[in-house]
Amino acid sequence: MNDLEPRKTRNALRARESKGNAMAVFPAQAQSAIFRAHSRFSRFSIFAFLAVPFASAQAPMLQDGATALRQARLDWTLGQTPLGPSSMPSFEVGFGGAGSDGTYAPLVGGEGLGTGTRGWGLGLQGRITRGGWSFSATALALRDHRHTLGVLQRAALAYQTESGWRMALEQAPFAWGSGLNGGELLGDASRSFPRLSLATPEAALPHLPVLGRWRLEAFAGRLERDRPMPQWLPDREARLQARAAGLDLQRPLLWGGLVRTAFGSRLEMTFGAVTMEGGRDAQGHAAPATAARTATLLELRLRLPELARLLRTRGASATLSHSAAPEGRSLAWTPARNLGGLQLVWEGWDLGLEYAGAAPRAALASTEPSHLAGFSTHGDPLGSAFGREATTRTLEVGLPLFLEGQGRIRFVRATAPLDHPSGTASWFLQGEAQWRTPTGRAGASIATRRNDLPGAQTRWGWTFAAFQAFRVF
Image (cartoon, rainbow, N blue to C red; front, top):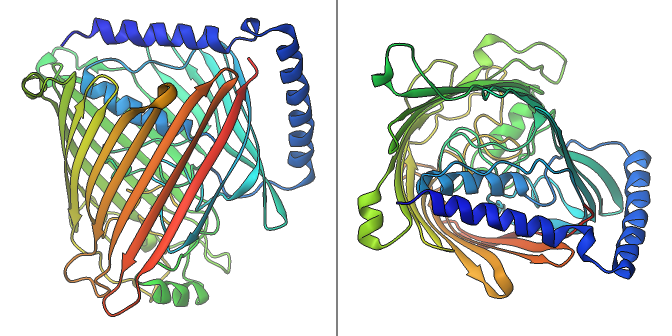
C-alpha cells in the first residue's frame, strides 16, 4: 500500500478547503452580508451567554471531536498518520438544534447531543495556534422549553513540544478502545468532562527495540454532579431507591492511563485502566473507599494488507479486545466483555463489522454508598453507547453522497445477556450526512431505536442533531 498518495490527496483537499472558505474568494457584497450576519449572531450569543448561567450539559454543536476520532481509526487502517488540525486560526458561527423523544436512543458519536443537550439556537466555534500553544472552544446558546442554556461544551488549552509531548486542560471527547459504538473504556456518545491530560511521543525503550515503540496517555478529571437515570435502565427502580436513601455519590473523580505499543507497521497492542472514586453523597459525606470502581481494557489491532489486496481495498484491519468493569477497584478481568471487529476502506467508502458481548453485571448493591452510574452511558462518557451489559452486532458504512457530500449509516442489533432478568432486545439505525457549502457546511444526524420487551408493547425512540455552520475566517 502506498502511503504517500493518500497524504498528498488529503493535503491537497485541505489547501483547497482553506482557499474555498477564505473570505477573499467572495465578492465585496457577499463579504459585507456575512459580516453583518456574524455581527448579529455574535451580539445575540454574547447576550445569551451572559444572561443565563452555564448548564452542566456539555456537547459540541458540530460533533467535530467524534468525527476526528473516527477519522483517526480509518487512518490507522490505511497506515497513515492522522492529519492534525490546521495551524491557521479559524472561527465559525452556526445555528441548529438537537432533541429526542420516546425510549432511550443514543446518538453514537453525538457527544451528548439529543440526550444530554437539547434545544435550538446558536453555536460559536474557534481555534488559534501560536508556537506550541493552541486554544479551541465550542459554545452554544440553546432554547428548550422556555429555558435558555449557555453551554461551553468543548474547550482545550494545550501545549505540544517539538518532540511530541502534549499537555492540556481540556473538555473534549476522546475514545479509549476501537469499538464502532464508542471506546470500550471511554466513548464519544456521551458528554465530555473537564480534565488534565498528558500524552507522550512514541519511542522505543532504550536498548530494547524488540519490545516495540511505546507511548502513554493519562488524564485526571471529575464527572458531573447529577447523572440522569432514564427509563431504559433495567434496574432503574433499585437505583432510584438507592438515590433516595442518599447512596448516590456525586462529582466523583475519574482518572486513568493507557499504554500503546506498536510492533512494526502492522500490529498495535493497548492496555488501559480507568478508575472512578471519591465524591460525596447527598448529605455531603465523603465517599468510602469501597465505592471506587475500576475498568480495564486489553486490545490488539492488526493491519491486513493481504486481505486488502485480495478484496482490492485501500486498507483492512482487525480489532480484538477484552475488557472488564468489576464491582470494585481491583484490576480484575471479570465480568469480561469481548469484542471483535473488521474494518475495510475503499476510495470514498468504508465498511465496519463488529461483534461485542459481555457477561451480566452483578446486581446493584443498596447497602453502601456507590456511584450508581457505574461504567455506563447515561450521562457519563464511559464505555460504548449501549452499555456493557448488551451484546451488540454492528454494521457501519461510510459512503459518498450527491453534491460531494459524505454520509454514514450504522445498524445495530443489541440484546441483553441470556440470564438478564429483563430479556430486552432492540434494533437501532443511525444515519449521518454532511455537505460543504460556499460559506461553510451543513449536516445532520438522526437515530431511531425500537425496544422489544417480552409480553410488552413495542417501544420506539429517536434522537437527532442538525446544524448549519458559516465559516467567518
